[in-house]
Image (cartoon, rainbow, N blue to C red):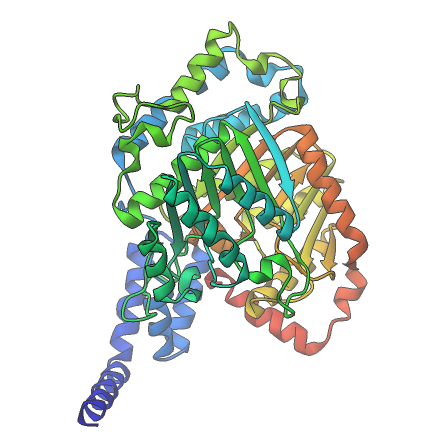
Length: 529
C-alpha cells in the first residue's frame, strides 16, 4: 500500500511540474519544430497549434508522435547501400544505352523515365523475369501462403505490421514449427505497435519452437512506446528467395472476413514468383538487420535461389546478386526491353520494388504516385482505405480530372479510424468538385491500396494514399509495368463498382452540419493522422 501511495505522489508531482512549466516547454518545442526540423509547413503549423492551444496534452502528443526520424542515420547500412547503388547505376547505364524511352512499346516508352527515377532515388532495380498472381480475398491468399510455406526447403521470412493470436496465425504456426524440425530457417518480424495484440508468452513459445522473432521498435515498460508514430507497415513474405508476397493483408481473423465489425474484407495482395522476390528479400533483410542486429547480408544463401554453398560470405559469392541478373541480361546480346512485347508476356512481368519511410531521403512511393498521375492520358483508378493526400498529390489529381482524365477514387463506407475517415471524406469531396468520381464501397471494408493508370502500369502494396504512409510509416510497394496485370487489377476495381454507392457532388453538398464539423476538425489535424 505504501508503494502504491508513493507512486501516486510521484505521478502527481510530475503532472504538477509539467503544468507549472508548460509555457517554457511549449516555447522549447516550438523553436525545435520551426528552426531545427525540416517539416512541411502545414505540419509545422499543425504542431504549433497543438502545442499552444491544447495545454499539457499537446506536449504529451508531441513526445509520442512528433519525433522526426527522417534525418536519423540509425537505419543506414553503408555497405549494403553502396552495393545496391552500384547495381542500380549499372542497370541505369544499360537502360540508357538501349534507349528504353524510345521503345515502340507504350509501356516502356512512357514509363521508362519512372523506372530510371526509381533507380536513381532508391536503387530499385527493374526485374522482368516475374510471374504475378493477384489475391483480393483473404481466405484464398492465406490458403495459397500455407501451401507455399509447406514447400519451403531453406528459409521462410515473414514480416507483417499486425500479427494477432487467432485462427489465422494458429493455422500458420504448426507449418512453421514443422518446417523448423525439417531444418528450414524461419524468421518472423512484427511491428511493435501492430504486434501489441500478441501476448508475450506467444512470442516466447515461437522462440522455444526454434522460430526466430524480431520486433521493430518494440515497446518498453509494458506497452509504452515513444516511437509509436513511426510504424513498420510493411507486409512481406519471402520463401527460399523464389516466391514473395506483398500487399494489404495482415495476420488476423478480420482479414479473412471473420470479424462482424467489418464484415467482408476486400483487400489486394500480390504473389510474385521470380527475380522481384529477391528485391523483397533485400527489403526484409534491411528491416531484420535493424530490429535484431543480425546482418543477413553476410550470407549469400539468402539472396540466391540457386545457392548451395553453405555459409559462404556475401562477398565470396560474388557480391551483388542483382548485378548478376544484369549480367545475365546483357549476355543475351540485348536487354529484353529492346523487344517491344516483352512486358506483355505472362511470364515476363516487369516489377520494381520501391520502399519509403523515415529512413529514406525522398518520398519514393508518393513520388511514384505523383509521376503516374502526371503521365495519365485516359484514366486513373485509385483504391485506398484512407485518402489524406498532400497538396502535390491532390493538385495532380484535380488537374488530371479537369483535363479530361477519368479519375475514380474508391474508399470504404465504414471507418476503422474515425478521424482519418472524416478527413478522407473531406478530401474526397474536394476531388469530386474538380470533376473526379468517388465510390463508397459498401460490401464490407475496403483495405486495398493501389493505383492503376491507363491500363498499362499499376502500383500496389502497403502504402495508403495519405500523409502518414508518405512520410511516417515504413512502406513497400510494387510498381508493375505490365498491361495484362494492370488490366486484371482494373477489372477487379470495376467488379467492385456494383458494390459501391457513388458520392456525387450534389449528395456531398447536402451532408449534415455535424458531418461538416467532423470533416473540418479532422482535416485540420490531417498532417498528424
